[in-house]
Image (tube, rainbow, N blue to C red; front, side):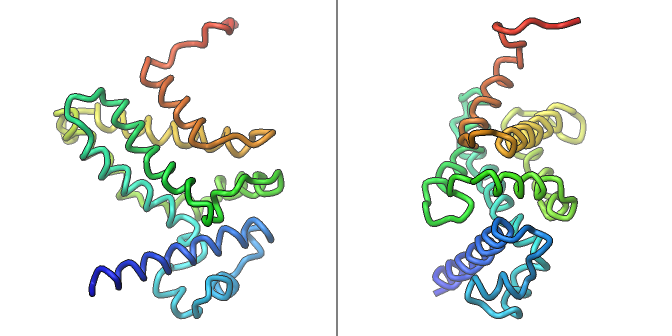
Amino acid sequence: MTGLRERKKADTRRAISDAALRLAFERGLDNVTREEIALLAGVSPRTFSNYFAGKYDALAYRQNERVRRSIEILRERPAGEPLWTSITEAVLTPLEAEFADVHGAENAVPSRAELAEIRKMLLNPQIRSALAGKLFEDWIAAIAERSGTDPARDMYPRLVAAVIRAVGDAAMDAYASADPPVAFTGLLRQAFAQVAVGLPVPSDRQVRA
């Protein structure tokens, strides 16, 4: 029953990650301990340590899993599809599936206080370092496969991967500062659509010298 065992492990990781986020929203990230996260998730501190090195890894877990799934989806998209269409759907599909799950703590509409805490988390270097660096190399490899380029010789797949990361950062920054709150998935789609057409200056704005 390996499949069931792995599913239980994934459920435990998700429960711990959700508990970490819920407590960070309620108390502020600096005031949360791994013991409190474990208690809320219904596991022992030892079990917490078996899954995560610390609270920052627990908070980063869901994002890392989405990225892994996005890379898988990109490799599954139709071969003739425009690259940025494939990338947009690859990035948005796991997010939209997660946001459809009303039980996820991170999927509720955030309050102003929660948005303020999101800003802090975005700037926290320990959380940013917990986002797996290897996944960036996996993005590069998948984009190289898709575009027929060689990441050892061609800059193109690295540029595309860097743009994907920049789009995510920009959308998350806009999400964290939005008043009133807006849908994160909508911001991502809007950002990718602008990149796909070459990031032109909006037609209703004037460029100031």
